[in-house]
Image (cartoon, rainbow, N blue to C red; front, side, top):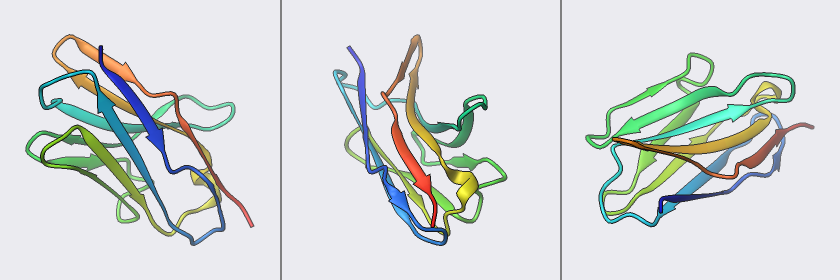
Amino acid sequence: QLQLVESGGALVQPGGSLRLSCAASGVSFTIATLSWYRQAPGKQRELVARIVKNNNANYADSVRDRFTISREKDNNTVYLQMNNLKPEDTAVYYCNAVHWGLNAWGQGTQVTVSS
């Protein structure tokens, strides 16, 4: 069964950087689409960035040019490098994997941007 485990969330000052990681396990194939979502208190979960098998990626307008999504070539690990963090980036960040009929979520990792 596909399982996702995120790590890397922390408290960081505005302008700082963080790198989130998400490791997928329980499958022997390369997952088609890996994404990062986030959910701030009182708001709906939103897509932050998405990457597919050929490494094409897309981003939410609010994070483009600050965040970079990447994936390891030989396993189902995805990263989110977050630079120039802003208080409005504060949220729980979730990893998502989609492959044909599979759709799995991680448990989330808290990112807090505050001075």
